[in-house]
Image 1 (cartoon, rainbow, N blue to C red):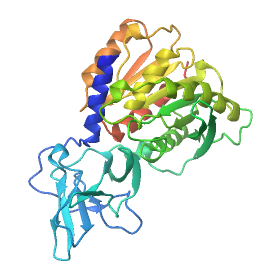
Image 2 (cartoon, rainbow, N blue to C red):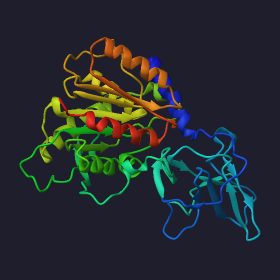
Image 3 (tube, helix red, strand yellow):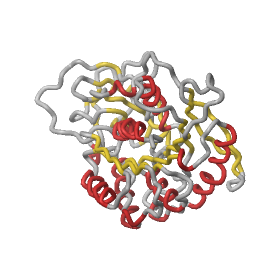
Image 4 (tube, rainbow, N blue to C red):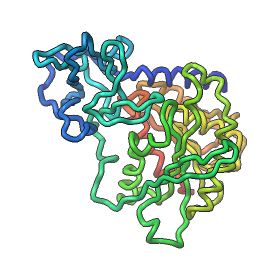
Amino acid sequence: MKKEIKLLVFAIAFVCTIQLGLGQQSSKVIEDFKPSTLNQPGKEYPQVNSQGYARFKIAAPAADSVRVSLGLGGRGGTKLAKTEDGSWMGTTEGPMDEGFHYYHVNVDGGTFNDPGALNYYGSTRWESGIEIPAHDQEFYALKDVPHGKVEQVLFPSPSTNTSRRAFVYTPPGYTENPNKKYPVLYLQHGWGEDETAWSNQGHANLIMDNLIAEGKIEPFIIIMTYGMTNEIKFGGLRNFDITPFQTVMVEELIPYVDKHFRTVAESSHRAMAGLSMGGMETKMITLNKPDVFSYYGLLSGGTYAPEDIDKEDVKLIFLSCGSKESPERIKAATEKLKESGYPVASYISEGTAHEFQTWRRSLHQMAPLLFTK
């Protein structure tokens, strides 16, 4: 477990430098830039082009230097140049990975959000967001299909002496079918994020709506709550104590959900999965409380070994990561679990790293495998 925690800490550090897997800049940047789909209403910048380059424009006429954190990773981001009208402009050195990315602007040493972009909670703060169009973006696109509902609930938490927040996805048809009960997936975010991440950045609700409309899955409920991870300072995750969150999850949240929503309140119809740090939490809780969940999912969140699992009736172990992460570890762990007779499936997201496109694709691959036995 210590080795896996160290590897996961490295992966989280990797994402916090916002790796983008840039290739060599091509000899010609195609000038077909369009505003990002995540821009503030009426804002022209930031922009993206068909190759995956991003272009920024920041109005800061009195500034001496402006950089954007995207584009060059550990080398300091994209340095913008001052234009005649006093604004600052620049284009990433190379194309970025497909999908969603957090970023911020550095003006004369100060950190700010891009006023042209919408904000998303990540890196323990509200960050600007940009979307690089993906070749497979249809699976999380907003389509003319029946839509489920994402609602906020506040549940009592005696262990933390407060009421805590969760977001609940109920599938289309939930209200119209008052006698039907549903399985439940408890889906966790990563370090630096919160319970808004899977809906806002991950489009979990749209992924579910589209899969249901295509007849590829049986509907189920998704619960998203804060994993109590951000109180741990960066670099100290190896000392993370799962006990407080495990208490909230198992003794407070699950009973609340089973009481207030129409669930099949049995471990055989309950799953837990998470991305990155949420995967680490998933592994700890599923191993500590083997009678609570029957489906396990680690999305860029480590692996299970056969000797870890003390439950004969586990129904599915799902492991995934991006091809730019450590796919060989996922493949090796999958083979060992298969050899030991465990029901296991794995997925490698091609061309992505420790980022939301990996996790969107992973959820899309995992969801049809849940609650099928």
